[in-house]
Image (cartoon, one colour):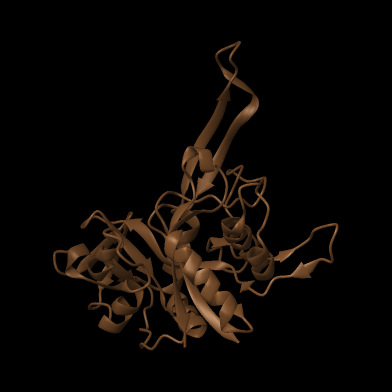
Length: 276
C-alpha cells in the first residue's frame, strides 16, 4: 500500500459545517466526537480534490474517474483508486502575550502524526500548566501567556520536531515562523483551545424592503482560524494514482474547502509528501 501525506495550511478561516445545532453556536464546525478537535472529513476533501479533474463542462475526466470513482447512471458505478482520510489538526494558532500568536501542538497530536507518517522524533511529556516554547513567546524568561492562561516554560521544543513540522509547508513566509513560535502544551490544554478558541461570528441577511434583519436570518457561524495546519493521509494500492495527484497539486497549490467560498472562507495552501 502506497501512502502520501497531504497538508492543508489555512490561509483564511475554514468552515466545514456540522449542520444545525441546538447550542449557542447555530452552525458549528465538524469535530471528532471523543476529543472535540476540528476535522475536515475525507468525503469533503475527496470532493474538493476530484473537482480539479473536471473539464470545461464540469464533467469528470477519464483520469479523474479512475482516481475518484464514478456514479454515472449510464455506466457501472465504480470506486476510485485513492483512499482519502479525514484531516486532523496538527498545529493550532492561539493569541500570545508575546510574539502576537503561537502555534500550539501536543503529545497526542504528535504521536498521531508519527503513526500516520512514520516521522522520527521523541515526543515530549507535557503535563498540567507546563509548556515547551521558544524565547520569542516567553515572558520574563519563565512563562508563556496564551489567551488568559499562564504556563511555566520547560525548555524549547526539540529541533527534530520543529524540522518535521517546518518541512510540511513549502515557501510560506508565515509558516516559516514555526521555528520560533511553536509551543508544545499538554493534551488537555490543546483540546481546550481547539474547542473554545475557534472564531464565532454573527451572520445576518438584511431585508431590502424593511432595512432590518430578515426573519430567521440571524445566526452564529463557527470557523477554524486561519494559520491552522491540518494533515491527512492518502493511500493507493499502487504508486501511479498518488503520482497523478502529486503532479496536479504542483500546479494547483491552493484549494478551497468547506462552505462560504464567496465570502473568502476555506482557502488553504496544499502540499503533499510521500511516506516511506
